[in-house]
Image 1 (cartoon, rainbow, N blue to C red):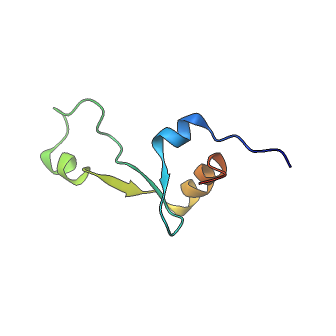
Image 2 (image 1 turned 90 degrees about the vertical axis):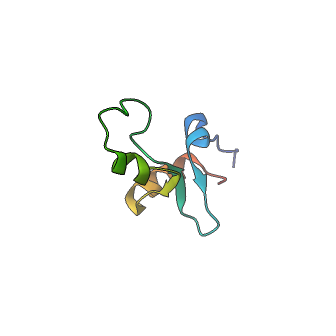
Image 3 (image 1 turned 180 degrees about the horizontal axis):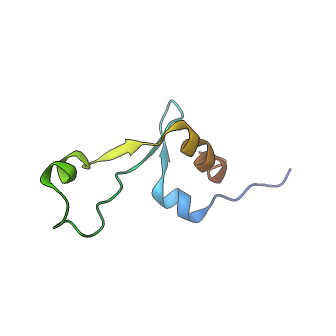
Length: 65
């Protein structure tokens, strides 16, 4: 079998945890912080894990994750 290519955009945005979950940055923090509440900004710190349905799609982009 030939080698599979990893999607370049996916390798920049996602990491796989040891248990196989997909870790990513919190959404909604790129711009427009003035209109966001302080609670939203505080809760969107750090990273989060994707839900199972989305993680299945991302794992196809990272064949050697």
